Length: 393
Image 1 (tube, helix red, strand yellow):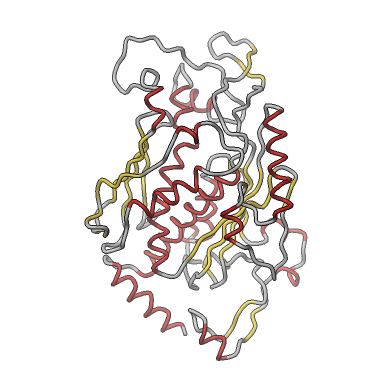
Image 2 (spheres, rainbow, N blue to C red):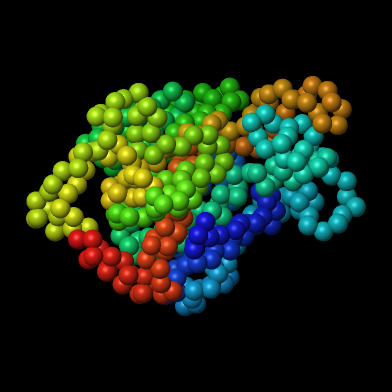
């Protein structure tokens, strides 16, 4: 991370989740309602488990904001875990004489075994608490701040479900997504027929005591040309995006634009043709450039830099590792074969993962914009931004 960075703290069943956000300019309008809106979206989605019925995620801004405006200092956030009241003995931060049964049967596909080995622990509980996707609630809160900033630059970010299990949605280059239908869909899919098939697949997996994965897509519009850089590996925009999306729990693959499908095509079929546009069309665009792309198979990024087209990112989400019918494992105390630990869980998290993907993309883009346009105050940043647009037109 560069100028815009953050840290999160807290465990899944601890008192709550905290985040410290650094690098946001002063005078950005920011209220708790902006963040709570995104937290609600993360909690939704067909296939979520009973935990989401317990929690009602709401953020408390405890620093960095005054009278509804950021003040340039680190922004401190806190989200209370309502389920903490049921876990106070298990997750007490103070020394206790109460004996708590340790978790000793790691789940295949989870952080359990690697984590307990790395940190030299005899109880898997500390690993599973922090490795839990519950932590992403704090990331979504941070992403909401980034999104609020990007809105000032005319950048919007959306996501939708591309696939759940074997049911996959395909779109041609010319088609567009109806984001209102996506937001109204239980699985965040605009195709009604496919939505029903996805929900049925989730129901079937639940009945079998199993879980389902899939693919989500995130689209950012209103992107100015020139974010990121080609000059060093760690300044490439696509590298930062891939890292951010890959860091989301259960994500096992990331592609930008047409991604892996490009590998089987010839160069003449892959690269987005540059063509001139009329002065009328150019003047109507945010960036008054005399050319455009005939397609966007590059997903809005070339040579590590945004090229002015929409940024399109897809991620493959594996089925989550906590199963009602646990897989075979080994008890770390006895060394004998045993069933993996089971704890209340979701059946499918793909729709919610898309919302988290939006937040992570927003964080990367906010950082890239702050690096590009600088400024300590929103007014200064916007002045630099508009001056850049004039210079490249």
